[in-house]
Length: 168
Length: 154
Image (tube, rainbow over all chains, first blue to last red; front, side):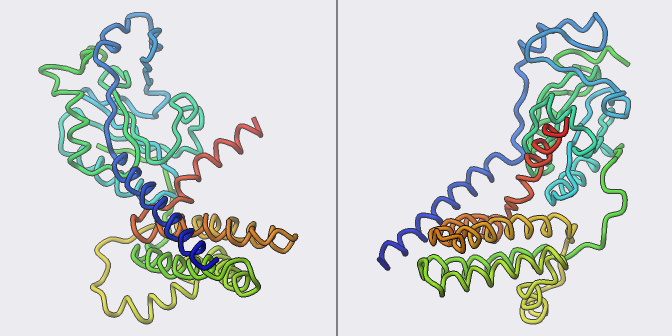
């Protein structure tokens, strides 16, 4: 009986370690929308894109004009500690990089976005290009290195995002 | 530049190492519960853990006995914290802990002693993840709860 209890404790702790390691690996990892999918989208007919897998955010939806190069649209909750750290990292980056903006939205007030993008945890960060097209996302605590890597999906305006940066 | 629509007035920050230390103490107690099995002793220790969570919900994570131990015995031996965290997330985690351990106790009181084991095992996963990885399971679940609540009211 006692042996069974010790085995239970070890099993519970082992399960927790596996969960913790998986969680750590996932944090801040950028998932880009495939370039081919983005290239197939037609942006000429108004703000909403009609292409599978492509979403576009308007300034009305996020409350600010997108940066000319890229915007980090962060979805945060009040109970989330990594949100504060991610906020600081992204705000810093936005202050340093030309054409890059950062907006931090409370999930409780933006449940429409939470549903539309199937957000399961905070922080979740959507990276949009100058035209508001979502080019990728990441979730969990994000450090500066990871944010910079994500930003490579939107090179400086000379090259432009996959979709270009035509929309002012 | 950066724009924010979150937390209007954030309360004063707390030392983030406090809740993690507290979670480690909680985890040790929960291991004791599992080793004790399903008897009266196990139930009493789990009730102690639940009472600690209740304190945390009522007064914030610094108001628990684990918080007092950290302030008295641990913090004076450490360098001052380099960053502070919002006290609301760890407080929410205390609520999640209270619900999990409370449900286990309730099930046990209603006649299924295994409730103690299941409640303690679930709470141990959460407390261990908090102590070892800084992962706050309650905080991760917050958004799911929010989505469920709004789906029902919509």
